[in-house]
Image (cartoon, rainbow, N blue to C red; front, side):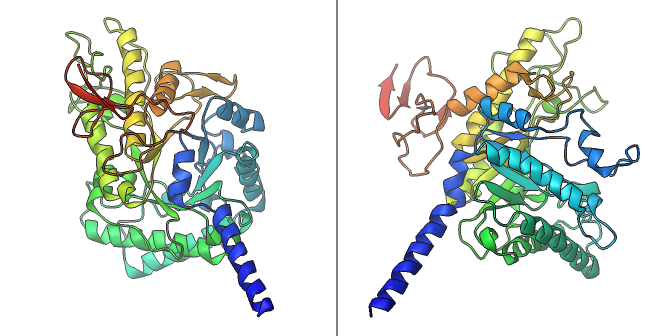
Length: 440
């Protein structure tokens, strides 16, 4: 009896330690924001102008990643690093990942782990071998893609099997499923779900810490509207160990459009109070209400049901204004956009990861200059940090007004009587702040 009791006690202790060592997705998510992308770095390839694939790291930007760069990223308040990474372009004819490439990726991951940062390591575009494959959904093609994706992820997962919960895996990046040009959206979603399932199965099969590791799966084209419309979530052997990923670059005219087209005009100015009188470059859609409604859809379908959402990429072009336009109002618009995206993302349970490419010349959506270890775009950086500090991570109880705040979160969160977050204290009316009702 004593031996049986001891065995049961040891099993319970082991189970408790496993749970403690690997918190759930909902437990990890509040600790991850704000996040930063090591963009345009480990994902290029193939690059015909470089004979050594290890040099692909500097194909699209000029800095080799160092511990000092990651130290600086952490010192500036970022708590997670997303590492976009190619793998298939570094495989031999038998789909074995080059050992030297795997070593280099692990070295970069270790820079982040050394700083106790969370890390999301993905399979990022990878020459489009699977992300652009949805035109061919024959059974033989889908089976082959599932098998190859499984081979890739088993190798990655095996190498990182002993890493703790700070490392997350993301199966894909922006799978081109159910987009505007698709003629078989339901078929796309079925194929995508099978690919995501192949990723989850491959990682879990490697055992070790991968049996409990939090995994990230992607919405079709990582588009919020498609994420809300379709269900592409795979099943998992561990409960509450999965996150869903979307990206956000809206309104396109403001965030990504580089030149005027016959069908539309760029936007230089965005947000309340930032328009320039008489300018043709004032944003005409995608205002603060649009941003909030987009993220609210993710709350409705995912985050309020215990599935955290990763806002894996977001960014807007910081531009030099032409003659006759206002640089001051454009800079204010950049601040307002980054602030609003982060504020409403967190309010709705999305973890924001800013896109950063290290180009450091305008137009760009860069935040950090990795060569000088200085902030390149102060307005965007301030918007990110202020937006993250302005709102608490939600717990989704219906009367969630005065729940505890962590020490590093600003307590001044303002609501109207419908529970909607307000950007500032209203000039008049009734509002709720810090759990108290005010009438002005």
